[in-house]
Image 1 (cartoon, rainbow, N blue to C red):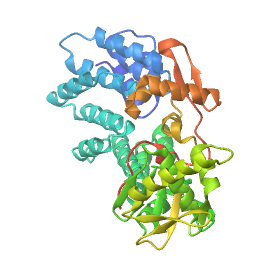
Image 2 (image 1 turned 120 degrees about the horizontal axis):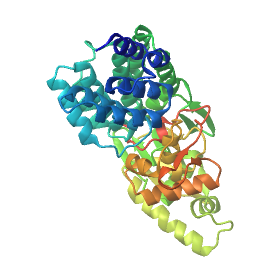
Image 3 (image 1 turned 180 degrees about the vertical axis):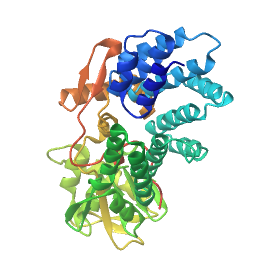
Length: 408
């Protein structure tokens, strides 16, 4: 390897893509193409970076398996950044095996981290955690140790383990300082915001206040009966009654939780549950049926008693009732889509479908509704269309992501 290639590689490792391009911008040999591709990815021109890396992979001879594998790993990282979740996972796995067989532990570790980050992104937390536990960041450069701790913090945040998340982010900050890469330090700072901005609202005793993630964790671990509007469930202790597939029942449960220890008039429940402006006998009959269903589901945790004016929630063991709501009133039907788009990246509808575990048609309907409401915007046409939205200011979207919250 000549001196210019070596110098360019060192510049890239130090987070200096412009310095790398100064050395190889006019060269078209395989190694230079690969370095130019990585430099362009660091500068944010991901489409150009992918083209250069593919050219580099073709330019390397079949015997240069390690160099080709490195190009595959770099392209996989770009696919993750562009939210191309349908990218060939098998190719990444084969590249990682090649790198391990030839002793390139650093790039093999990078392949592992790309896969862990993809699993975290699509909400497969158990798989991501198991894979991360197999990786030892100690012998790796500071940049990779930073990535390791960022992924650890991401898993902890999604599981509402705020102490573990804070510890991991502290280690990530120290590793990022040693790496000396501004972009990496900025990524750590962005992750820290999830712990320092409101994640939910607590509605109890006629008032409400914003909660940070650690306060949300404390509420879920408390002895209160919690009507959890972030996951559409009612919970107390280790018992969780999911109502995500029973939206009318959850609306009634939330209304009763917000009014506790008082009751909710029947006409109010009809308006909230059925959207009726005026309650007639058919609405009241339907309300009695839905309340009966809710009463049966909540029996282990609470009763729903009839009062002179309406209905009231009566906890069986808990002394308090609290409603855990989203930090802002986001359309519940499309909250998960907004949460993914709020990362500031552009997403295709197919990638969102993979991340949400639903059909692309369902996602497209949600995107069309959000676009009509002015909450998202699209770029490009047909298969090249991407969707994005600015990060919602003032609160973290951690509780909007479709991953189950822990049971205390």
